[in-house]
Image 1 (cartoon, one colour):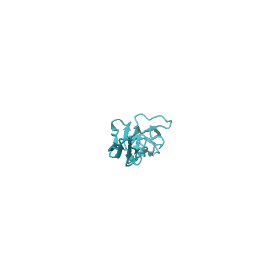
Image 2 (tube, rainbow, N blue to C red; image 1 turned 180 degrees about the horizontal axis):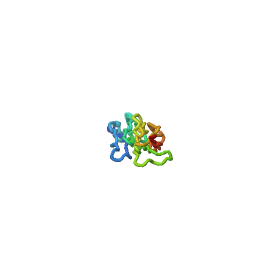
Image 3 (cartoon, helix red, strand yellow; image 1 turned 90 degrees about the vertical axis):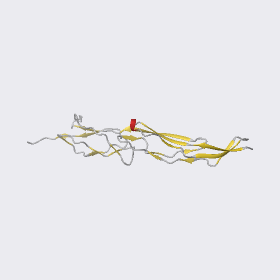
Length: 164
C-alpha cells in the first residue's frame, strides 16, 4: 500500500467584542500541527496523537468595561475538529449616581464609572464616591454588585447646613 505523510494544522481563536475602539485584537494560537500517515489504499489516516489542548487565555482588563469570561479555557482540538473559536463580550461598567435624600439626582454632580476589579475582569472594583460641594455622604466607597457590574448605584448625599 502507498502511505503518505500528512499533517493537519490547528488553531484556537479568542475573539473579543463590545468595547468599541478599546476592544482587544483576537488572540490566536496556531502553533500546533497534527502529524500522521494516510493509507491511499484504505483511505484511513493514522495520527500520531488524537488531541492537543491549547493554553488558557486570561481575559484582558479594559478600563470602564467588564467581560463575560474571566478566562477562556484552553481548547482541545483533534485532527477532525482542528479549530476552536470562543467569543468574550465586554459591557460597560455601571456608575455612581449621587442623589438627594428623596432619591433625586443632584444636578451637575459627577457620576463616576466604577473602577475595574484588578483581580477579575468580570467585576467592578471598589470606587470612591465623588466629593460634591455643599453635600455630604456617609458612603466613602462603592463596590458594585458582582452579579450586576453594569448596574448603577444611587448614593445618598445630604445638604450641608451652615449654623451661622
